Length: 507
Image 1 (cartoon, rainbow, N blue to C red):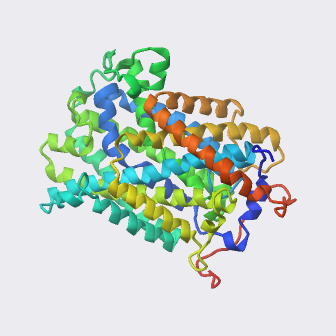
Image 2 (image 1 turned 90 degrees about the horizontal axis):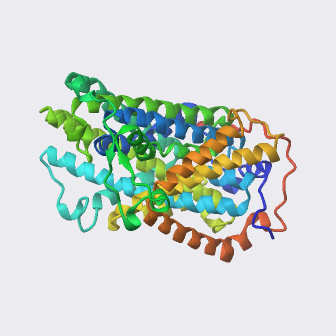
Image 3 (image 1 turned 135 degrees about the horizontal axis):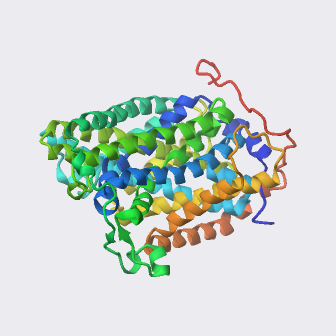
């Protein structure tokens, strides 16, 4: 029984119509765009901008955001082609199953579970930290023992439990709340851009590209793998600083891939998935560049606060009330990130459980809400415990390496599926195939090499655990390997829709 057996696109789509695994189709292109913006614009825009400008790029951090956006756009194009061709829950997991085979699908699904579980936990803790700052500014501080950094981060636990309940209640309801919070977040971001222009001093942009200088190099297991292998010492500022900044701020874009996990709940995935993925990335790129331009004009890059650049840029000019408003926006912004990562985690596990690579009983869909309620509860409990009791710290890089490994396999999968299944109907195609997908894979691999040796070692341990589970359980129980599981001889993949409108009494 080959571990490289593949699940056809037709079979993947046929599985979505099985009554016990059938999700409700209710999302539009606007929902997906809001979903993407909600998860991408988070801690990155509130903290990472200042950190990258202060440490490696200076005002040229604006160019770094553009470079990172180009690298990210290459991956987004690959996701858009796959999501419109294989409109099934599971994102990169499902795409890899159809193109590279079961073993690769398991690996990437296992990596995505790591990314989204840890990502949701880390951001929940960040939300708790911002909430503590906001409440202190309002004169009602949270008791230290139950706040961020305390004995138990009760605030982070409560956030995850509330959002988990909302997610279990319904995907459309979740995105309605998400829409409101994203609107608040976008208002704050636009406020920073417009109000910040009042404090801009053009002299702070000179020199726009500061002169290159040796960077503070990490050593031992903390150094980037590329530095460990090549022995080349990194530089800050200058042209090298622009690319170092791009590697740093690239992670502010991570999250658009979560949009692809909701393909099965989209009314017209062939049209709406590419729109949602690409539109959210374009909007976020414009906002990131504008914020970076304004903030580096407000405060000399040497004086930017790496931990809370936006709020402290206004404090620098004596506008404390504006800093409080920005802290409130950060609380709203990080709420949407946690919600979307929770939804993404449930959909990945749902797809893997439906294929019996994980226990199939987990994939039960609630008869009324049409959501995977068992998985939703499980994900909520695990994330709440991790966020409340575990000091994540250095594990944050694990989120990035899991995401980038998915980017690599999706790009390779586009090339493979074009060759093995040229007959498939593709409503969106990556241009210049195979060159752009290959460039996407190389760009993601390069960024992976910029992560620390310690992160790579943890990643290898996680992969080893995943391989052990696969060969001990998943390979033998896989639905695809069962004699009664028949491949459906469906026609070429075309628009695959059904009416799941909210007023349907059967829902």
